[in-house]
Each structure stands twice: as C-alpha cells, then as structure tokens.
Length: 143
Image 1 (spheres, rainbow, N blue to C red):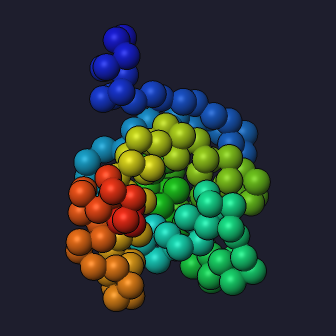
Image 2 (cartoon, one colour; image 1 turned 30 degrees about the vertical axis):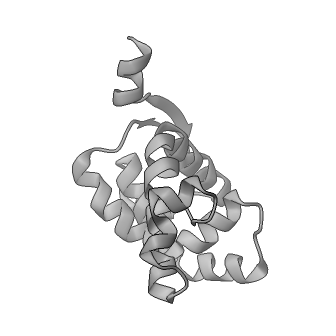
C-alpha cells in the first residue's frame, strides 16, 4: 500500500485486551459524531494529559465523567459499553491510546484544535479572529 493511501485509509492494529482480540481501525464517518459528543465534556482534562499539565482538578473532572470516556472508547473500538466499562484501568488506557494512535491525524490535527476553539469561544476567552489562519500563522492565534 502506498504511503499516501495509508494516510487516507489509516492503519489497523489488533490488540489483546482482557484476553480478547480487539481490532482498532480508523473511525468511520458515522462514528465520528457520537465520539465527539462523548469526548467534548472531557476535552479539557484530556488536553491536560497531552500537555503534561495534569492537575488534581483535571483528574477529578475526568473521573466524574468516566462514562464519557467509556462511551467514546466503546464506539471507537466497536466493543460493547459493558465490556469497556468492566476493563481494568490499565487495559482501558492501552485501548484508548491505541485508538488515538490509529486515528492520530484525525484526533490531533482536526478534533482537538476544533474542540478547544469551541471551548474557548463558549468561555468568551477567544474571538473568531484568534483562530483565523492568519492569526495562527503570525503566532497570535490559539489553535
């Protein structure tokens, strides 16, 4: 498969989680809206994980919305919610990270910046001009 086609189609990875093989592949179009809805309330704590600025408040917020993470992982892994909810925490992390890695281009380049912009606009802390391409190129905008 060519590199260009691989970028479009994405990789597929098979893991063994809780003694069960789980195939992770790129999200399908119909899966994107429910994954975004599930992740939106926990984007702050998730972005703190990636920015290595995790605080006790972020951990508490994520813990209080654990069902959102379970729902998103269930949809993205195509596994039943009950099965995902019964995983040990370390298995859930391994599974979630595999989903992010397989879908990295989508998550990192499109979903996270878009959701963070929306969160900023909802807080009133960012104007539309702050996220314009020109503001971003000049280093004055917020991704």
